[in-house]
Amino acid sequence: MSKYIKSTLAVSMMMAFYGVSSASGSICVGYGPQTPRDIDNDNGKNKQIYSIAPKYENMNLCNIHFHKNAEHKAKDFSIYAGSGKHGVGGGYKCAISEKLTNKELIPFKGNVCNGIKPGDTIEVHWVFTSCATQPGKGLGSCLSKSCANPNLRVESQVFTVVNDAQAIDFNKFNYAGNKVAGYYQPKALPTDTGTPVTFIGSTTGPSYNAKKCSSVQATWSVRPQCAKVDINSLAKWCEANPFKEHSAHGVRKLVVDERLLAEIKD
Image (cartoon, rainbow, N blue to C red; front, side):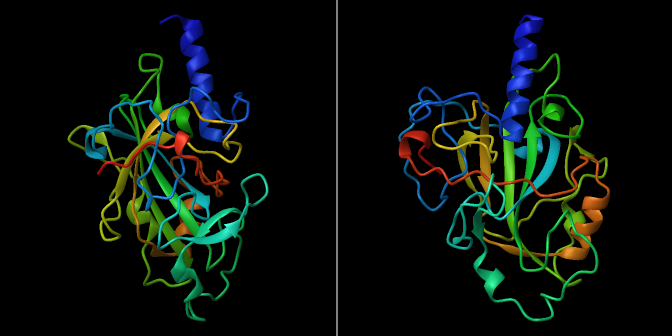
């Protein structure tokens, strides 16, 4: 592969990660399945097919980041937050976010992740790659000069943020330099929030919509239930983490046109 092609692909993947697309038209003609979606709806008519990525245990963790509100939709996170502005303030909220105690909603002293507050919903993405790369900042950490077209897998969990030290410690799911069977891995992933829904799709980003699609393919594994995460632990993670992530990303509007969705088969 020429240096030009490698460079072009790398730029394309970086654009996809940060929500920048050069495609236009009434709908994304010629693009593969898109993300995010309603994971309770199995229907999809997109004819582009590619293989499901290996299990995350057999891939390298390359990035962790999160979005303000859920990008995906499911029974447990189906409260519409609105369309938002440039992806900020849109998406979906957990049902449990409206049933929190006054104690769980006590304001946090200080600025958490550039504006996260108790009661907010976040969707966390652990991104894995087939490339032999180390975890780091952005999608650029998921590819290399010798591995410019990797298989990607995104493990996803939706949380409600609470001010409660007894809730989940976010750093339990962080990367701390650990390898398992030769692969870079997070310390753990959520295991008690339902069986993940697995499907093929794309990278997400607030600039994408039905007219502007991502060309980067990814396998998704989205857990269908919300969990509560302690805001104190999230604040510590945003202050210092290997991925240089200090604030929430915006969300892409839910993809509903079945021509842009793959059928969920599992």
